Amino acid sequence: YYDNNIRLIIDNSVEEGHTRDVYERNLELKKQLIDVSSGKLPKSVLYMAIKMTALSSPTLLEEMTTILNTENPSDRDPTPFMNEEQLNELDYTLSNLTEICQYSKDRGIGVWL
Image 1 (cartoon, rainbow, N blue to C red):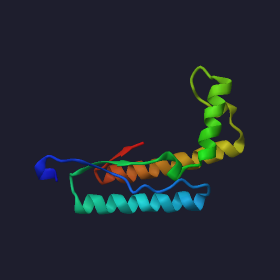
Image 2 (image 1 turned 120 degrees about the vertical axis):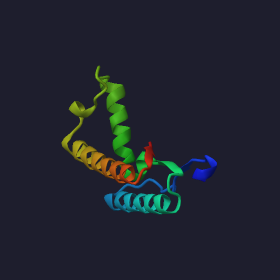
Image 3 (image 1 turned 90 degrees about the vertical axis):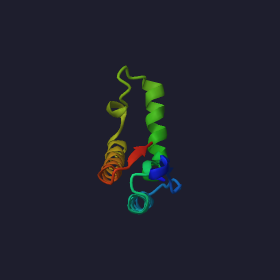
Image 4 (image 1 turned 60 degrees about the horizontal axis):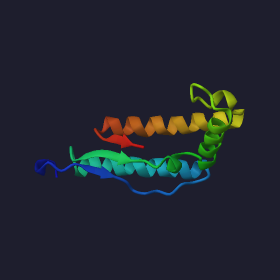
């Protein structure tokens, strides 16, 4: 594809989950896709699409949206209004996202959220 000036966006369409086991499985599936893509299609894959709810709690994202809509912080930062459980879940989510972004970057593939 690269020689014909064609670039690809990849996605394995993992479904959202509601437990850390599901998020960890989805993270590993994304890494496998990155490995296969960078190995079999070098320079051809520009981005990998990631659905946030494949790696993080949809409930947390909804709660953060509610906070933003209800509290309307001027800096659009919901964290001062989040409880300890929500903050822990956010830290876990950011850790997963950082891991997959770095993994992808190290293999020359961008991430599309």
